[in-house]
Amino acid sequence: MLKTKWICLLLAAAMITPAFARKKKDKTDYGVYIAGAAASFSDSLVFFTDIQRVDSASLNSKGMLNGRAQYSRQLKEHLEGTQQLQHRTCFVFFNKKKQRLQKEIDKVRRNYQKGGRLTVKEVNGFQFRKAE
Image (cartoon, rainbow, N blue to C red; front, side):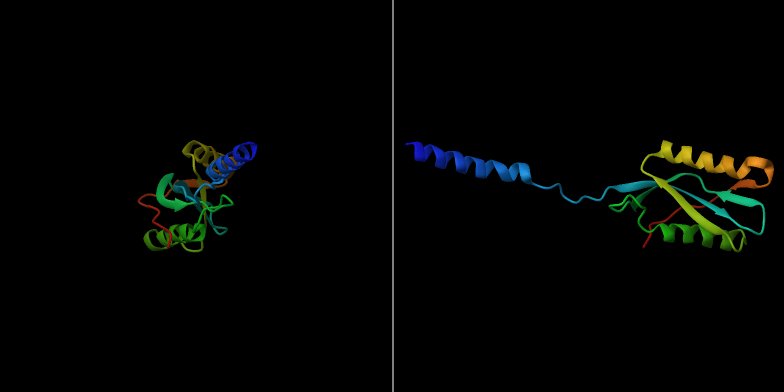
């Protein structure tokens, strides 16, 4: 009788344990807020895009934006093509939360505007596309 109880207890434990031991599925969470900036060492203009939610964008396991170089290249090609602005260094800022990204962008803008030596301008008509 005691042996039967132990066997039943072990079987019950064996059935319950896998339910608790299941790993979460590796689910990529899509949708990231992105803003771009472009500067040049040869003039005093610094360009900023507006903050955009890119639903196809995602972060990797280390929290970095997948395809971030491609998003920078999109901005560079836009400035070279539509506004004839050559030799710009373009970079992107990103965050899952729009308010945090806005705070970061505002800080960067203030740093560029400090001293009045640089002029900050908006990039109009630009939209980030899905990184390939």
